[in-house]
Image 1: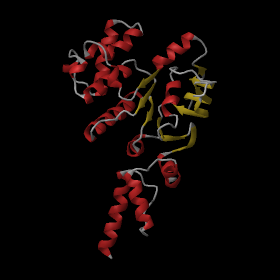
Image 2: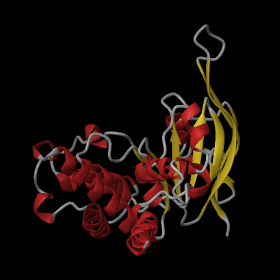
Image 3: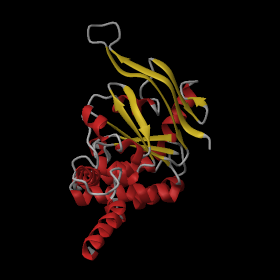
Image 4: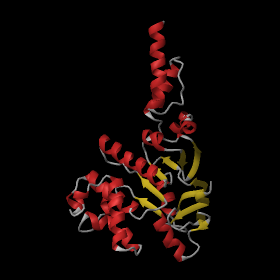
Amino acid sequence: MAATIEVRDLSHTYSAGTPFQHDAVKHMSFSVEKGEFLGIIGHTGSGKSTLIQHLNGLLRPTSGEILLDGTNIWQDKKTTRESRFRVGLVFQYPEYQLFEETVYRDIAFGPKNMSLSEEEIRTRVLRAAGFAGVDESLLEKSPFDLSGGQKRRVAIAGVIAMEPEVVIFDEPTAGLDPAGCASILGNIRDYQKATHATILMVTHSMDEVAQLADRMLVLNEGTIEMSGTPREVFSHAARLAEIGLSVPQVTALFLRLRELGVDVDPTTFTVEQAVPQLRALLEGRAHA
């Protein structure tokens, strides 16, 4: 399967040649396959935000390359511009970027810049609103009259209305209550299933990434500390703790049970994986 995105030896230095010089990303290389859900985790300052801003050309590499379907996105101005439509980026707290008079116009802003017909723009707005959970009754309202969760959905709809092949979410549930988090994550999961888009999600929540990601990157001090499936990554709980990260709550529980001598799988990381093991333990005790 061809890689949608390939990062080759990427480095980015802020304020080069000054006393404030900072190497935010150092020689990163990885690829993301078509239709894959990649989770990106790391402590504050590990390089997550700098990395993702390179993937659709918002930042230019100090060195290295970003390839989209085999083509360097900085090959020429036309390619760079096209990459920004093909790779959508939903910033942390995206609702702060809403600015139009109505929800409809905010969602339509990206498609309008793609020179689409009004009919196609309307089709995309309605489809994106549906995916993001924005009720059609809100489309003619001001985005500033909406709740925080509704604004977040409108901002997400504005990105997916461009129908990018790749969507990058930077902390999509930041600041939301548990119900809001679950709802937004459900929308993201449903969107990927329906469109087969490639998804990258930066998050501080180990439980969220455990539920959704096919594969994970763990960043540390501007480098890739480890990569692998959630099971592979969360099996390194001690190393994750050393670099300031945790494991999902379920994993923490099962590690503690293992320490106490209970025969469970310490790489368990979701409730779905935990339930049959706990049920077997309880049934075993009942028959003892």
